[in-house]
Amino acid sequence: MVDSTAHDDVRQSPAFERLVARRRRLVAWLTLGTLLPYYAFVFIAGFAPQVLATRLYPGSVITIGWPVGVMLILGTWVLTGIYIRRANCEFDQLTARIVAGGAK
Image (cartoon, rainbow, N blue to C red):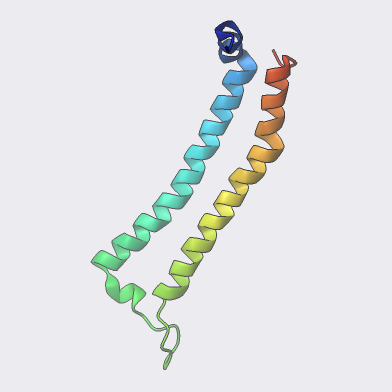
């Protein structure tokens, strides 16, 4: 059985509160960085489709919408990579210190 006192001690530790606050702040920024471009893309597609339907250059069969869509997907991958890197390098170390009781 898990000791609830240990859980309460961890939850009340200032280091844990800092970890949670930092992670939430990062997640909020990354979420905005993902959702705002996607919503802008959908908004433009819905209300100004001629913008995304513009040809890349005269005679091109590819419109601006295609590379913009690809950039949205690649940008999401980059933001995911940023979270993974921060989680593995920073948050995991802080978590290990908190669990070990080293950061009070």
